[in-house]
Length: 91
Image (tube, rainbow, N blue to C red; front, side, top):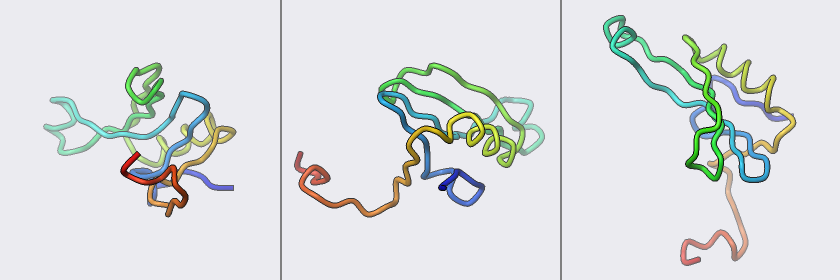
């Protein structure tokens, strides 16, 4: 079974119906002053409306949380080769 990890987190996510769960990163003034990033498990509706977000201080914890809560959703590797008419950029 596939899972999101520290090597693929930036291009893999979980999807179910109109929802997607992924890891993003960011910072606030405190984390910037400490020269570190924060990682967020974020659930979106229709790829734009934030439904849920949880902050983590390290990527490994974010991956563990994402996998433990959303592993039963469809795993999507956005770098995987797609084929068929529906993948054409003209559509």
